[in-house]
Amino acid sequence: MAGLGRASATVAAGTMVSRVTGLIRNIVMTAAVGLIGSHAADAFGAANQMPNTVFTVISSGLLAGVIVPQIVKAVKTHDDRGSAFVSKLLTLGMVVLGAATALALVIAPVLVQIYAGQFSTEAQTLTLALAYWCLPQLFFYGLYALVGEVLNARRIFGPYAWSPIVNNLVSIAGFGVFIALYGTYEEASGWTPEMIALMGGTATLGVVVQAGILLLFWRRAGLHVRPDFRWRGIGLRHIGRLAGWTFLMVIVGQVAGAVQAYLVSQASGMNAANASLQQAWLLFMLPFSVIVLSLGTPYYTKLSEHVAEGRTDAVTADLGSLTRTVGIFMVGVLAAMIAAIVPLSRIFTKDAVDAVAFSWVLAAFLVALLPLSFQFGVQRTFYALKDTRTPFLYTAVQAAVVIVTAITASALVNTGALSIAWLAVAIALGQSVANLAQFALALTLLRRKIGVLGLGPAFAAIARFVLAAIPAGAAGWGMFLLFGGTSGWSASDRFLGILGAALIGGTTLVVYAAILAAFRTPELAVAGRALRRFLPGR
Image 1: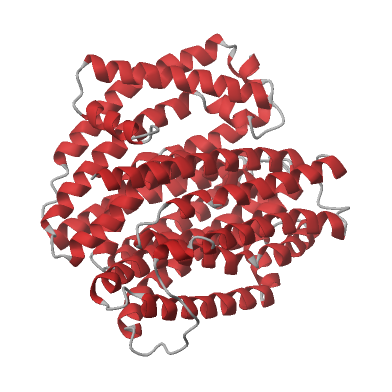
Image 2 (image 1 turned 180 degrees about the horizontal axis):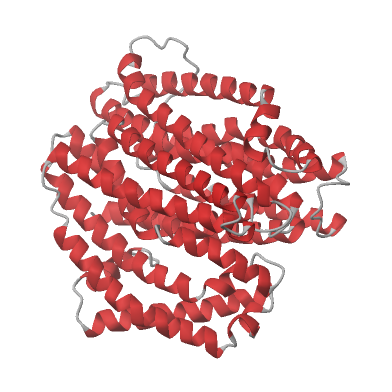
């Protein structure tokens, strides 16, 4: 367990720094191209969404669900500790990634129509120009995820968590140069080839460097890897069956995301649209990435080992423990984010009015923060059991709900029943409803597969956390009102928004922890041990 704790600390520290620098990157980017009502921000968001969406799905599904269990098994059973197996997999993966990237570049105009079909003509032209610069990220994101999962399977967690920091630093520098040269440029017209190359090239260069850094740590994995096109004999048929369902998950996720992007694009240039959805989602995912992934990534490797050893009796105990540990952190963070939601939003927007509009989009996503966090352990349990079909089934249901709710929101706008100013909020809320349905179905299907999950005590603990979070959140909101609310200093400036969010969120968390301590909540000790793992020398 000490090794698992150190691994969690390494992942958490790297992820924390990565997300903080990523937050700075997004602040600089919105300073360069704006956010609410910005044609340029929505065009760049749509162009950059294409490779990012694929990477998110692949890294959380195809690679984690298929590659890690296979590598863990190869390390334990092959005489060469999996070197030949990994060589063949990497070669195959790079061939597939190269072909996919080439295809994406060829059909870029079609992709722009899918993701930005309701933009103005000028905005669509800008989106296509930026897409040609951004789509090569597909190959390097895939390479990063593939090599990173190999390192994770060999219990080398640090590089995968820390390398995105360099990506963020490259982007911050590039976007900073854009601001120095051109200032804030929100229009879709007037973009020169140099401006397009600087914005799109900066985004892609960061991903190239991020992937390249992982290769510097390759020797630590103890693998002797070389190009190997002899793919027969590595169980491609078995891997194909596993990957086939996950590939369908990629398609389903892409379709749902494309529908959202297309429908919300009608609000571009006037209200919250594509860029606002993306920025709100990234902010929503910040605590998930820092807390859930740092705790869950080493857990998943351990879980894969338990399954390989036939210790399925440990699965439900691990799942309950992870749920309680994640829960005590995430409930407090959720309360803090709600209390500080306007100052948080002001960090990305040009004034308090836009901050309020953005905060509603973020709030709609926050509805599903807890179930999405708990679903991580459930989904990884399916993957460890080498079951990718079931995750596809409940993801397909989630995607269907996403599509139906997005179409419904658009229809309400078109009939005049809903203001277009609320379209992005309605689509974000539909995403949360879909995530809630997905989590409920995932639990039901896992129970059918392995029997009683024993999560009753974990969910009872979460209910106690929520009861403690309500007054804590109220205390934080009271501080926001004391600061003057939406017309106060914490919503008046980007940097003051950072300060205000820190004070409000910090107060909420302190009150939350104090209430849990006053009622002698046993899980508080578990959270304390988890925190101590992240301290130097632990």
